[in-house]
Length: 519
Image (cartoon, rainbow, N blue to C red; front, side, top):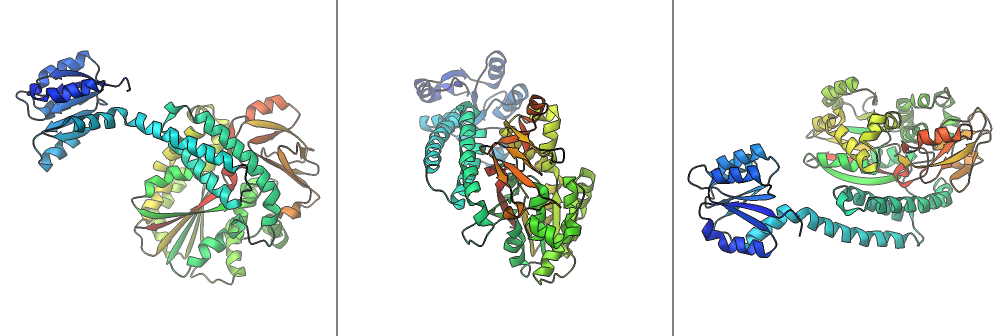
């Protein structure tokens, strides 16, 4: 029994309720009695209660008026209205005045007990069940890690773990947060071994492989071009599965939602993954066939300036004729985003609309640089909550609401890669020309401990660009990030506990492809 068991029962016929009150006392509840609204108000001023049962019809100050005054004093105090009157208007009025529940007289002890448990103990009871179910799932996942897993198995493990992490966010009192975190890390250790063993096969002709970044358009856009007047293809930069699930619940009333999953190519970074999505090609193929579009400054962001051109060339290679030119929009600031929201319905005249949204990626990078954001989002749970808050008030959500109900419009939402909270540094060696990225690096002679990173000595084996010279790559596993030996401890501390991408982890690589169709 929780300590939350102090009940006030207010009824002008309280003597007729003695059997109910005695029953509650036998179950461990403390019950204080009052026979009118005036006395109830005075008692509540002096004592703390966890629940109030309130008769609706009392002489003097009636139940509804007493309810109003109780809520003025203690807005969060649950009040259950007990009434003989079953009229709909009374129930609506009582609900509007924020009753927690109501009972119709005559009430029996078991009804009353059920209400008490539902209001006062539901969180504990649900938490107990959640704890039992999670421990069972924990053991199941731990056992599965000893088996020879497939990419489908890893997708299912990632989905299960992500759903449990979100479920357990609601029950911090269970003290399972560290257990979940430890199991996630254990899974990433084994997943990194799995990817290192199988990734080169996926780049080849084998049929037993997941959908990779370069097959997104072919798999999810092309088949429906003739079935819809307009397709909206949203790419949310740096969105993890858990972040999407926080957004998804806001869309249930407006859309039928289905989800598929794909694996990001390596490294899990925007210049590689997003170009692969829009071009339908691996990065080495882009470098070979479109050197003018691939070549740019060493600034990684400059590598994503030609996504519309890559997408156009994809449809040309496939000999697919669209009704009109692709409408491509990249959203990087809120004012521009609001403008797109206001005119998004007019986009439905376009056969294919591609919209890239950078705000989730901006949250990740801003958290790394901003002490206040790090305080607001100290861990994955809070990071999910921060994403949810952004989405609820975002123009992206506004765009989806505007498109809800539009006939013959299909919406596909995905991401180029996810991110991981990096908690372990590893020394990396390289010359002055080596890239500065924290989860992957390329250069003439970059190195790191093979226990913590994949070494790619021949980039073409991994369908990666040579970058006008002989370079090699290192890609971080699990939650490691690279730090050069110079000022090692300074940068180790600076980048510890930041969300990064580019490496191998479940959150970075296994990603949702979401289809929305209006109800």
